[in-house]
Each structure stands twice: as C-alpha cells, then as structure tokens.
Amino acid sequence: MARSRQSPIPFRSTSFRPSSKKALLSTEDPVLPRASTKGRNPLHRLAPPAPTVRVAADSIGLTLPVPPSVNHQYATVNGRRLLSAKGRAYKDLVGQQILVALAQSPHRGTLRQILRQASLSLSIHFFFESALRRDTDGGLKIAQDALCEGLGLNDNRVVEIHLYKFQDRDNPRMEIRLSVAPPASPEPARPTTLATPAAVPPKNPAHKQRD
Image (cartoon, rainbow, N blue to C red; front, side, top):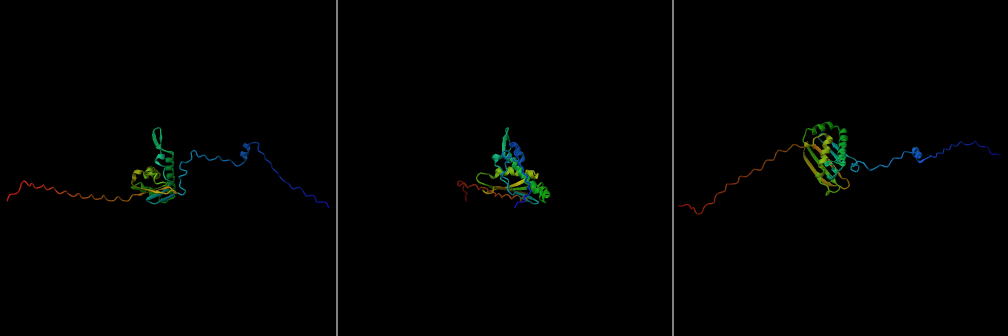
C-alpha cells in the first residue's frame, strides 16, 4: 500500500551573525557602565531609610543622620576655611527634608509666620555609634544652620538650646526639634544681703571706771 504523500510544512529559519563585536553590542540590550563611586553623594550612607518629620503650628521636628564630625565639616582652600562637600551635602539634605515636610503639612504657612516672630527653643538628641568619640556641641552649629536656613529663619531667634547625647550602635541618628520658646520666667529675686553687725570695740582694761 502506497503511503500518501504529505504536503511540505513551511519552516522559516533565520540566521544572524554579527560582523563585529560592535555590531553585537548594537543589537542587544544596552550595556550600562558600572556605577562609579567617584563623585557620589558623600551622604549616600547617611540618609535615613524612613525620615520622620513632625510639623505642628508652632514647632517642627525631624529625624536626620548624624552630622559629619567637625573635622569633616570644613576644608581649607587657599587659606580660607570653607564648608566641605560633606557639610554642603548635609545642609542640602536637611533643606530637602524640610521642603517636603512643609509641602505636605497644612501648618506650613502658620508655622513660618510664628517662628519668624517668636523666640525659639532648639532641642537636639544625638544618638552616636560610640558616645565617647563625639561631642554634643560638635554637630550643633551645622544642624542649627541647616534647620534655620531651610525654614528661612535667622538663627539669632534661638534663645535656648538643649543638647543630649545617647548611644545607639544599630541606628545612629539625630532628633532635632525647633519650637516656640516658653515665656521667660521672671528674674529670680536676689538673695537679701544680711547686714554685718558693727564690731564692738573691746574694753581697755587699763581704763577702769571709778566708783
């Protein structure tokens, strides 16, 4: 019995051979160059994973990375002491966090108006990896300048400052809060100075009263 002849099944085959390595690169997905660490943001390791911002009508609080140490805040250029790249990056970071917080807060207009007219209180809690290697006042100036500049305030409105230092190896950070200072308490009364009794001259035994 003769087998029925089946019709041929069409099959398409495409072969491609690039003429050069350059052509291969042009036909495949683009190869991205490896990211270079040069010029990277100096604070790329300091940015908090979830920044905490608290905005009220008369105060603002932020949780930020620990500021650079004093030795890394400034650089000497041509005999002039200028803010270093790390210092500028830190101030930019604080300014960005403030702008985002104010844009999302209904108190942004009221807060700025109140802070620009009132005496201010600054409170900073430092959480260092090692409490013995950092001083509390080392990060004060750059943190205060960054916060006030981000809010458009003159830092001379700050009339009281509270600094605290703790240790947290797993989560180093800085919790900063700027608020309206409480009313100044009346000047304490000066202690009353007791009058010194006048010295009584001793009696001269050579002069005895006569009967």
